[in-house]
Amino acid sequence: MPEKEVEDLTVSNSHAALRAIGWVSVGLGIAAVSLFVGRELRNRYKFNHRTPYDFYTNAGSHATTEFGMGI
View 1 (spheres, helix red, strand yellow):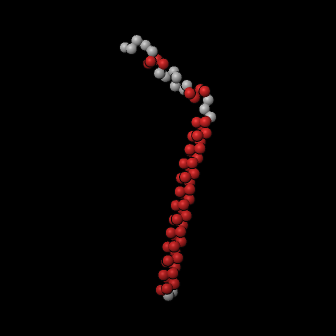
View 2 (view 1 turned 60 degrees about the vertical axis):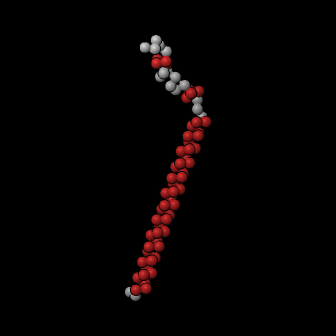
View 3 (view 1 turned 90 degrees about the horizontal axis):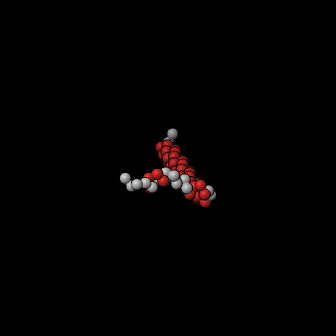
């Protein structure tokens, strides 16, 4: 095999590896952004669809400590 062909194969393989790494990083970036956007949308949906009971979820927890003799 002549030296020129070996160099071309090496350059071609390294180019393919860099290209694959680039596409994988793009895919991971898209996945991270979509997870973030999905979480934000879910939190906004849950916040906008609260029930009246959600406003009073911890109403009984502080009732015993607020009222008393203050001892």
